[in-house]
Length: 396
Image 1 (cartoon, rainbow, N blue to C red):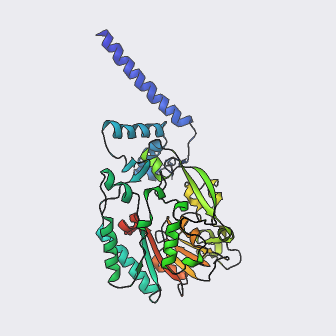
Image 2: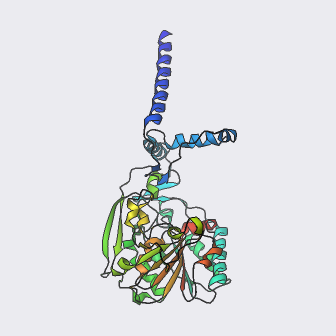
Image 3: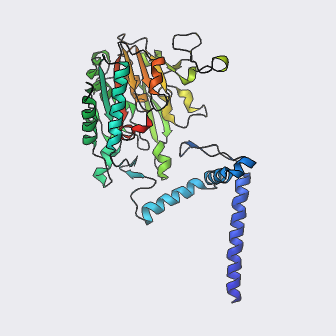
């Protein structure tokens, strides 16, 4: 009986010591502001006020803060992932699965109403801004196209998705479809990330350029000397690395430069928004004082703001960008309604277009783009990946 009491006492003392130790570590351990593995900013310590107590937000925010800053958090997340895979025999963790050394996120089921919504959005833009111009569209398959169904994971019907999108668009407009799906394989994507590799999509770039009638202006062809110089950025841990919480080898980003990309410059709306008396206005590309940056923005690697090395491509996410290419072969202009995949594609098209405008409707309302974009005479391309097509509510 006494032995039982001692055992209980030891267990209680161990629990108390562990609790106190965790509390001390939370108090003295320097807090990180970001999680590099998850590529997100961590919750900040909430401020205690009467208002936050009254509306209970203080307790909610404190819980988020403690969860984000719990000691050995990454290690515990990894243990949880191993438990899910190896003990519970789950095939995924946090909707992330790993096969063929690739991490991917489940995208299922097909949302047909979203496909119709996207078609309506594209048709509305065509009617409002460029009803008399040539318009093309293409869909970038996500990694599930190559991995999910073949490995026993649920997968959407990609052929049906594209067929439905084409049928909906054909009701009101004549858009040219560029089938780039057949140009791609799983090897064209990063292992730990959702995006495609720039050095692997030269054939995609040429296919798109050929469809729009400017393929002859590019100085590269599939399987031939491209004229590009390759540069490497090592230790790229993509978005799925942290979500999977499993050990994976990092990727290497390869970006391609030539004389055209070296002289091109990027204007972005966010960089050129004025403050103070002129708040809400922006310096336009040709105006004095406009901020212009290179196509490959290596400062993103060290600025402490960007959480994603993929942002070196044209500066990453932006509502509106204009890329000016003075050494392009033609004076033609291209406007792309895009997502993040386009950031690494567009440098490959600069030899054929003097100016390329990128519009990301996740960050700017459709009604506002006419304030900044001149559509007259430009080629128009809609380029979206599967996730955007299946979740068109993200577009404004």
